Image (cartoon, rainbow, N blue to C red; front, side, top):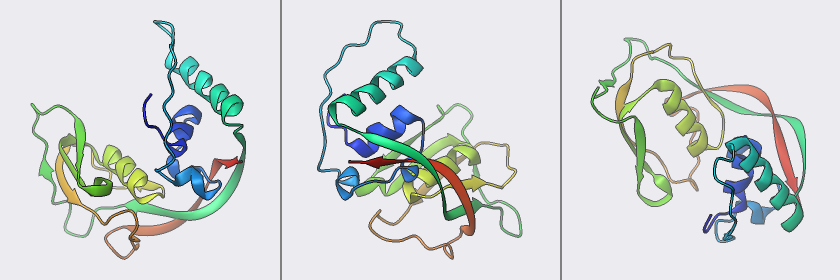
Length: 172
């Protein structure tokens, strides 16, 4: 693993979303990146690799954590009156997403679902996005969203709701 920041490693190791992790300011500072040079035996299950990374974070970085319930904004992805106006997916296109621009400000996919799209928005916006569209078909997207430093307001096509979620809080 090369050039990984703690805010990338912790969610992967603990199977949580980035927005569920809180801690000191340096935790989210992408200038604090680390190279991890480790060898994992061939055939090691991903769950075991996650556990190994948790142990490494606790021992080498002195990471201490706990889980707690918090209230924070939750967004819903909904279909507007008049129905969806989504471009159908190219059935021959490989599912997946590509990013462009600074802070991954442009998202492209020729074959994705609304559930996958809601997950992408969750990561990008830093808050949960729940797929309430009921759309089962796959579609193509080409979306440009504001940079991470700019706030995305609930009035911009997403419906804001409130919710809670258990999240690990990292302590130094």
